[in-house]
Structures are given as structure tokens and as C-alpha cells.
Length: 443
Image 1 (cartoon, one colour):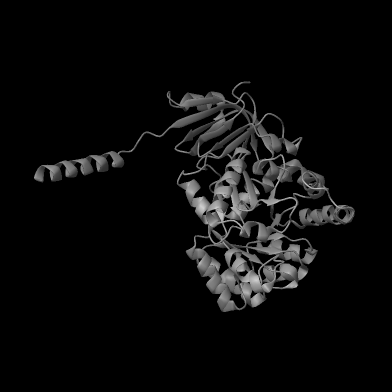
Image 2 (spheres, one colour):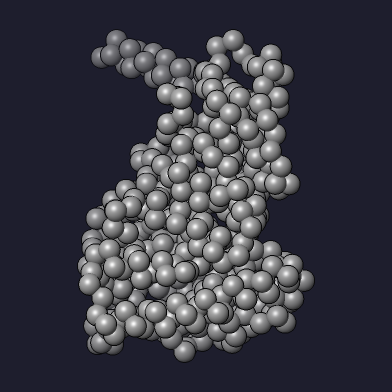
């Protein structure tokens, strides 16, 4: 018995000693890239990036960086490809993939078990990462804590995927959001997707509940279906979230909803369809971000729906009328946004199962929409890299290629400053210094 005890004790000591030893960091050298500095919009030729322990250690001319790289570094020659920071989708729904024949989001996902839904989310997360989206902010429709569970699984290395900021359940007025169900049977679905807020006290409790479930930020729906969060409730959300150093973002499309969010001094506003010049000025002065979500602009929604269903003449006409109105309103709105000086980022708001595309490919269709909206390529790049990183509060981690930041990098064969849709054809993806995908090797 004593012998067995001694053997076990020695085994434990051996395991503990081995675990305490610091393993040498793996070093990777990316060479011969045309590196884009997203903040300045300038290219630097023949650049190298030295990566150690999953972070960028040095960036500079290939000849200089190579001379300081360890002899055993893994070298990846990018052959003059365009190297950029990993993309950020600031408005993602990784636990929702609604069939295009049915736009009723909640009944679709409510029919799934939590396990099946998170497994679906794992697939969509992997597809986003493979397309070059190395960071995503999941803004709801994830069940009670599906996005937080998926984030943790990715962080543990159980499944591949981007870095995730999780909202957990959205805060809404009583009744939830976009819920076309009989009230007699709706409550269980509401409780799965939302935290209802009917007073300032309930607003504080909802924030605390989401914090308990692991939320990285708080998402509020200010104006669903003609119902509104009050200013007192919104201020309570902001106060409670900021007390725990969590940001607050708000779905707001109406003037009333946007005004409530602005007056409560939230951190960012999603969509902002009817935003006024005065509200933009207040947002600019207060440092409130606007998250532009126009992936379906320019007839893209009708094209998506037509891939898997035959549109009725009535629906076809409704979509054409909507597109005509959108073509008149949305570009003008973006010009107001650009002139206002307000900080803005961009998100896909992709929640469809897009026929013929992975989730990552579907997410990347946002770039063509931003171009058609009138956004210059460098502006669109910043909106999905450095500006998005700042909106998320992660500017010290991601969004640009600089020493000390995570080695989350992508490369394309073309020139995204000339054609922003080149980002739909990413050829190289790295996250944490680990190559996810490399189609440049055979060149």
C-alpha cells in the first residue's frame, strides 16, 4: 500500500513538473507580402510579419525581419499577395440560419433543441472563419446562452471558429421582437430568445442575468414593431452594463428609438434607418458608433430568395417597390453619415441559410453592397477592421497588423482597394498564428 502511495505521489509530482515547464513558443514568418495599413490606406511592398505565441512580434521589410527571425521559424511565402488584418463582422447571427422560403426567424430556430442549435452554430462559425472573418460580434437570436457556449468552445479549442463577443439574450419591451405567434403559446419562445424589460428595475435585472450567463456586451431592441424601451429603462441598462465594463448596443430604426438610445449614451446603434442629421451630430460629439447593416441592399434580398423559392407576383412586386424606395433613400442616408463625422463600422446581419454559399461566403456579400451604397473601398475595409475593433473595444487586440496584436491575418491575390469584392475571395486565413486556410502555396 505504501509503495502504491509513493508511486502515485511521484507520478503527481512528475505531471505537475511537466505542466509547469514552459514550452518553447512556435515562431512563424510570413514573407514577401504587400501589406495594407488600413488606417492610412497605404500599401507597403515586400513586407514580413514575425509571429510568436499567437501574436504579432514584428512587422517590417522582409530583408530586415528575416535577419532577426529564429532559424527554426516556419516560413510562409505569400508571393506578393495582399496581406490584411482579419475581418470583423460586427453584426452576426451565428445561431440562426433561416431557410429563404420562410422569413419567420423565431419559429424556425425555436424548433431546434439547444444542442442542435449550437452544433449548427459551430458549423457556421467555422465557415465564417474560413472566409476570413476572424472576429464576430453575435448580437442575439442565440437562445439563452448558445453564443456564450459557442465562444467558450472555440476558446477552449474544441471547435474551430472566430473570436466571438456574445450578447446572450436581447433586452426588449414585453413581447419580444418580430414574433408573429399567438400570445397564448408565445411566452416560452420569448423567454428563450429575449429578456423582457418593463421598468428600470427589470432593465437592471436583465443586464445582471446576461452577465451571469457570460455576456460580453448588452444588446437592446429599442423599437420593435411600434413598441418602445423608455428612456428611464435604457439609462438603467447603460448604467448597469457600464458598471461591469460592458458596452451597450441598440437595435434602433425609428427616430424615437434612436433618440432614446442617443440620450441614454449607449455605445453603438445598429441599423439607424431613420436617423436624423441632428442625431448624427449628437452621436459624433458623444463618441457613439453607428453600425451600418446593408448586406441586402441593391436587390440582393430578392436574388437570395429567388434561389430556393418561386416568388409570387405580389411578393415580386413588393420587393421591386422596396428596392426602388431603398435606392432613393439609402445612398443619400450614407452620404449624411459620411459627412457627419460620426464613427461607423459595418456588420452583415446575415441570418439566412444562403443557397449555394457557406455562411462565410454569404457574410462576405456585404462588401458588394457597401460598394453599391457609395462607400469607398478603404472606408469599407476600415469599417470591417480598425473601426469595428474600436467599436467593440478591442482595438488593442485586433483590427490592424501591428506588434502586440493577435496574429489574425488574411490575404487575397487581388487589390481590395480597387475592388472591395476581392474580400469575397480570400486565399489565406490565419488566426492566433495558426494557418486556417492557404491557397497561395501552389502559386
